[in-house]
Length: 336
Image 1 (cartoon, rainbow, N blue to C red):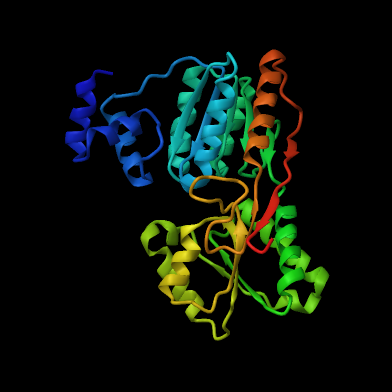
Image 2 (cartoon, rainbow, N blue to C red):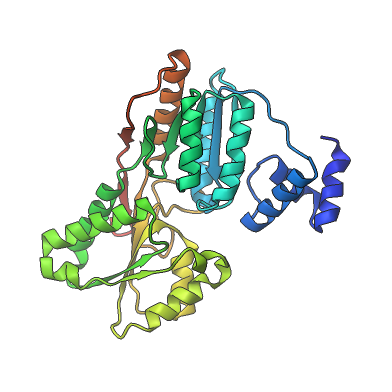
């Protein structure tokens, strides 16, 4: 693509050239709305980024960056030590199925043999992946749990992660009742974590577990990310009881802290959840404000995914069923 083509597209859309360049080249650092706008206009204009042939294609989200950039960094570093040709396409949010579907067209054009992907498997994505599998593509689902026949899932066992953090809570705060914030109903990872968490509470006390409230938002509530903390805060305020413990069954840093600040929930003394690293992306640390976090082992997950990719490139035979490679997570607490 000529350099002035980016500038022309940027002028048409009223955004800066560097943003257009990152979006067209599928790079990190572009918000979901802008990325979609640029890609749609680029498609209408017949402008496409280069699609070089590769052996492995990786599709990863970019938000939250503190978490997904760790996967991106680990993949680039590990693949950099091999002679395998790899292409990366980054999209903005885990639920942005439209961008993922667009990227799958690039996967076909690249003639990749292996796809490493993190995405919520919508019916449309699943259907498209199954067609591509029939053409010999080996799909590795990384971190984001999903059901896809003849694929491999590499990530944590979300149910066991929920059990771990639930047992941790019961051992220390059994005299308190936690409030559960569920970001979007229907997410497989979140649903399994909540089930595992409640199972631990039920094992501790069947009556105790029944008292735990779950606050849910819908997909529509997440269309404007700036209003999410206020919506959660309003729902919390509508509950008569006061809770000092909040469990976040999805990976987040700023959202729960923003909720507490928005609603002035200074009574919250225990905030715990999953995959809450420091700004530097250190696996061993819990972000300031959290009491504990059950963190995935990103390095081991990436290594396992790459090992599977290498095996398939050497002997391209699709499995006859979905294979699960569960990588153990670990709880990190500011109390220990």
